Image 1 (cartoon, rainbow, N blue to C red):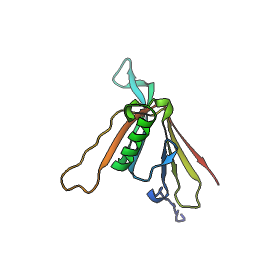
Image 2: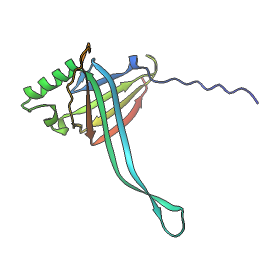
Image 3: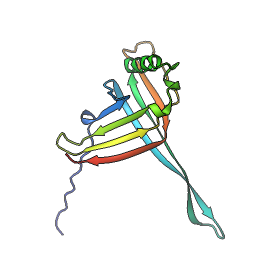
Image 4: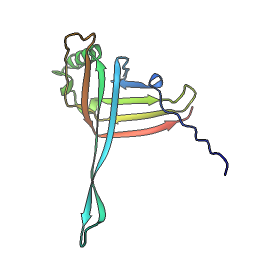
Length: 149
């Protein structure tokens, strides 16, 4: 049997880009986009499940930013007439992520639409050199696509 070589590569942080309100966020340290489907085993006679029933689909996630980026987002919300980022309507917020494995590879796009931030945290501890703020959210949908250049 011949040796089988599997070549694998992952996306690199250096080739990732996140846009929020159409602006590339440079002060981002982490992001997570999650899509889940509620599922439940159905039981009838006997001890084992006879089927799996699917329920609603839920989309959520979070972005982690440096404090200056949160300040910019809060200022933009205020300039648009909202009390804070939590009150900006979900119709106005989309998060777009683009990923590449290498600069020459196709671009993978992940888009979260109808984003509504559920919490903002602004904290700093003794000895900290920076503020890191996590913004969890729920959203209407997350779509992923790949485009070859």
